[in-house]
Image (cartoon, rainbow, N blue to C red; front, side):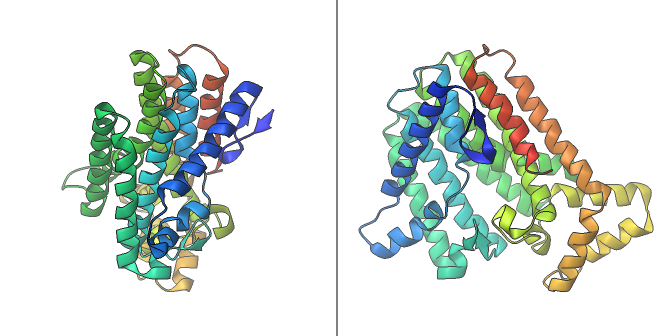
Length: 336
């Protein structure tokens, strides 16, 4: 048994382990190459988060999904570079929107160089991803464009909030399907597509990725409250401080509206106050960590992970399928 990839994923097959390790190394080299510029300053800002590390969750899914076809097909690694570059670009933009100070254990780009440089660096990464994508064929361009539209739509929906009469939890889950699920689904789709897997396999893996992506983000929601900065790589309570309505908060508000318990209403009032004050933020984190809403959010993450696992049922049993199943557990294990 060998530990490989994010979350301590265990790979029990030497051939699969070798493929994944070699693939991840090739992706890393591809990321560094794709983020080089003739302008040294741009190279530094573009490689800032690449060199900070990261789970490489999406490239791992590309490589595992490619196991269902020709795992050595030449377009697999470039497609993994594309999805990771796209993901990195969104992080630069997200940190500007959230005014985040820390990302992956280092200063965020907006903290180090300012918002303008951070936004433009994200745009630079999108441009480099598009250049690589153009060599992968028109179908790859179409798939990525549709996913990117969904990603941006999800972000706009989150910013705009639910329409009158719309259940906030349902709205939020739709947001996550776009913001996170879309690109994770494309990671699985690209791996299967580029390996020449059967269309039915491509569809199964795409459905798996969509659900796993939502589970992944829900686990992150829990981590924003339950973890410390060493564990999550960013400042705990960042989403709370910025007023981002993550699932634990939505579950709290849902419970407060249904039961009207004074403690729940008081906690909602605290969350609506100025959490720029460190003492108030610490108080809010402590209260949420002990609240049933956090456990409900954990259960929601588990539910989506179980749906991802169930989506894999039509695939033949193999070590790659076993690894994808194990990822379902590994993703939600992060949230406790």
